[in-house]
Image 1 (cartoon, helix red, strand yellow):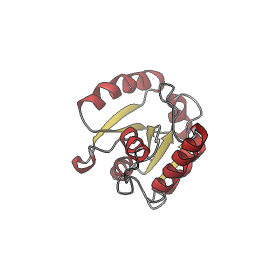
Image 2 (tube, rainbow, N blue to C red; image 1 turned 90 degrees about the vertical axis):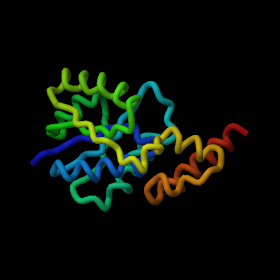
Image 3 (cartoon, rainbow, N blue to C red; image 1 turned 30 degrees about the vertical axis):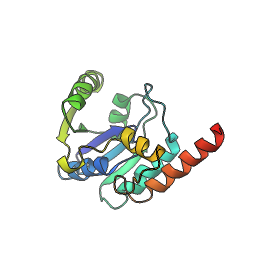
Image 4 (cartoon, helix red, strand yellow; image 1 turned 135 degrees about the horizontal axis):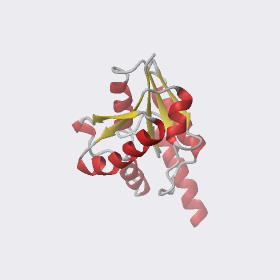
Length: 164
């Protein structure tokens, strides 16, 4: 069985992420959506929320599941028995950010990273932009899987109440 890991912070998971998972499933028997913590980002959603939403987003994709990465991705890749890491690429800036991580992960785990070009119709969808649109009252329902927008709105409303 060929298992791939599709890592990210998924804050929140988007339709672009799900598209990459769907296409990775055409190459691998199983794809594990690996919800990780990025020390350089302050997440809107806590780890439990991000995992729950990722599980909801891939529930209809046979062979896909979502799990929390408890530490380094390299250790998680070994733990699940993955033969590859899959990353979606929207453009040159993604390549510049992802190649050093791919090289470090290969150094630490021996596992190669496969880059999948994102669907051009979703190239504008990034979690950071989704959060920005939502923070300013914009509609994100068509940018994220069903159920995700409502959770983002609830978390932002709670955040506004705390800071008011």
